[in-house]
Length: 248
Image (cartoon, rainbow, N blue to C red; front, side, top):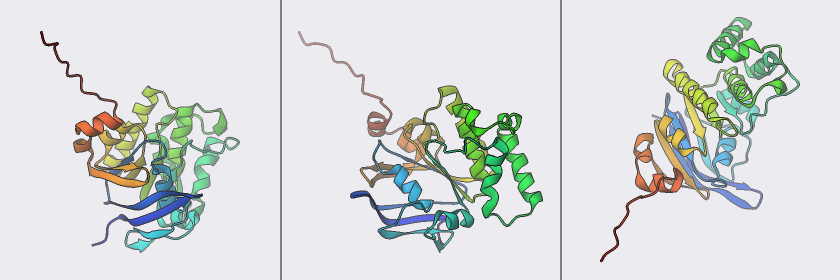
């Protein structure tokens, strides 16, 4: 039986840099899988490659048993949507237009699209209040909600999220991650998250991978990695506070 998504011995170059080195991982349907690592570890390159935005030097990516196409347009049509780092909404389009623009790959009826729009607006009520506003007038948190909503309007089977907490206030981050859990629990949405905030990423994940300088160095259940002292020390900023008394 094939995996929902499987990455096998993936090698990708970014300019002259060997950004991903023999990376292998998998996602089963209905999971939240997180990939954590420091800046420059290759996390965003991995996500962009899965989304069809980066060329594969060698290796293979299969989605629901089929090899991924070479373009992002075909990848979206196949059922993979990316919420990019930095949101990248269309600032001059209204909230409604931003949401509808991602339905261009769909062959569904207007009724089906309207139903999905209602679900997105139910998930993010603030967007409903701002449907006629330009995307560029929204707050950072609202823009992130819009970016997630836009990706959902493509009706993805796999939702990929690149640094969703970046640049957001803590209270907005908590709200956003609650929405991510809600998507997974209530809609059985399969989600791949690349995130520098290791605590959030591991707390929400069914399973997780540690990426370091382009290679997978650890993998396991999110809860297990979250409780691992070496992971806590390197990625969560938790240090051993054991003190020692001076000898007489």
